[in-house]
Length: 336
Image (cartoon, rainbow, N blue to C red; front, side, top):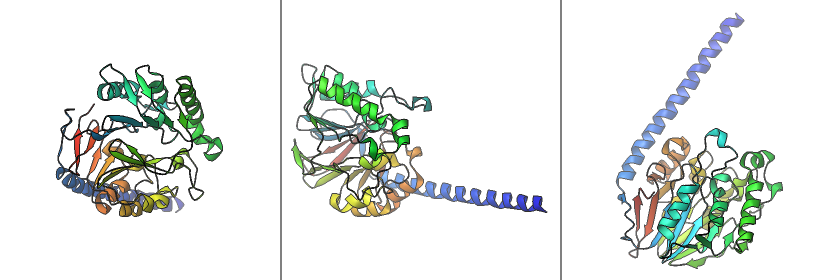
């Protein structure tokens, strides 16, 4: 009798799990079909680096499921995060480094006539290897000059021991600071919250000082978001903003409407909540990941709530969003 009950319980559990998985698959398929409809309504062409849309751009590099974003405006350049490094503490899990690709791209796009790259500033949004892993290499490259670095002081007491161990946060932070000091790059630890001019852009940082209302269980809660504005067009680069930390709820109204959103945490669970998207109302969403790795609920929220086309940097081999003088955002792909 007990065996029969166990057998029945297993059958019921199997059908329940199968039903849930089938429902998720159907919903995900519906979302992808709708998103393809939104995507097809947006013109995206191959990048030819001819400056046909002007020189006010956000370059979203293809560094798989990691962040590396080059800001360009009126001859000025700055780097937001640096992509997955080549010495990942979790490299045994199959993470590829993008050191060579990132440095090559900087030298291709941002070099002067003498082959020198000048970055007005670099910003490490937070101390996770998929965001800051290449900074030491970039800082030490003799053909790359950096005006200053925005980096929050890393506090080991604010993140879990597991987060520190898995990501090697402390060691990476120390190596970055050492490289900056050796190369005489000024470091700004107190991240400003007021906007400042950068070429034709206005840039504003969010979460430069993590508020008490934010739940800090891992370094993602210390992420610095970046708002970029030209004329009537605005982009928000969400670093690893997530809802479960309270960071999305705390900053949504302060960020306000945006035209383009780099969704937080690579589209993993906990990012891009319905409430966050309802406030920001993005018309274009970009994810630094492969479409297949984005969580179904995130795709659902972006597509069904924001009704925004979702573009993958991995699928498109990098994307440039150009802010034109006629108040448009033009997208180009295949930049790497």
